[in-house]
Image (cartoon, rainbow, N blue to C red; front, side, top):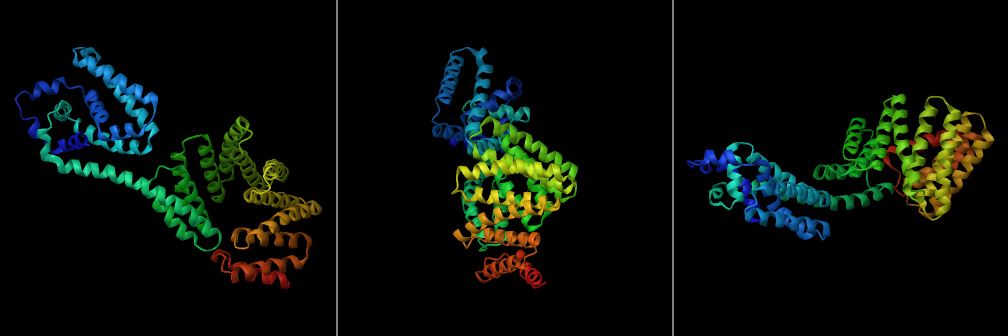
Length: 429
């Protein structure tokens, strides 16, 4: 820790350190890359991360570095470059394994590189690495500020992790009508401010912005989710989110391309591991979103084909785990989308069957958890669709009854309050 703290303090004491008559010679001999790597390798953050890391490969790398250093001290100066390369490789490997360390060492690296940015600074850093720390004492305030920044970053990441867990509960409370979208948005905005490098935080925030109708903020979140994507699946999700926004903006051609790009990745992942239910679901969602664009473009046969491809996957997932409420709901939505296309094509008997299949699932879900606002709302949607396709107002009355029940139990979201008056009108017509 002491060695780490002294390095950044050199920033304010460079004039004192370079005052010696021999400074010009020292400056000319400094290998900046080697001194920066040496400082980062010896940093307390590196030592602490090493102690946390029970990795045999990392231990072997450190042993090799110790061996190189011993040979150099014995007079084999030709190995200096090999030592610097080994230290650099070790730091990069450790950062790849320890996210907290990666943030800390990045901040420390900036400070060290700032010191070494001038010939005089590089010479000062070399003297520090060689053990001449006395001259650095005058600038401990600068050092403390730099270390505080690193510590604060670690604290921010840890705080964001705790906030992320709480935010998941807030999402659950929102689904039950106990918390507003704005309240949950505030939580995720804080999380992304504290730790902006987590892809799924931006995805969730983008979905919340969608529900709040905040299109520009939603676009920003989608862009950040793409920037922070770490693998193919996350890139697929980010492209899908961008396609959603392009759809809202009316750019159907661009949206279709984004969804097709997302689908290409989803297909590759699903084929590589057919047993991965999450990837299968991603593939189904991709087909469904493409179906939505084809519907908007008026290509109903293509849309039906896409929705049926999506439905086949949802059906397999739901059958594989009947107790999974999420997959059951996905299947009900799939029935609805197929029913919508069948209605548009004039095939009302087929549409009726699709909507009835959807309703059967939703009634089971709604009965299993009357407090789940989303499932109750789904039930309203099913009743409305059945009323429209059959002309039977009894379904509209049932939809109104569900909405009034939600209002009474205080789980009807403010954004859905309009439904009661609309359903009353339709039930009386």
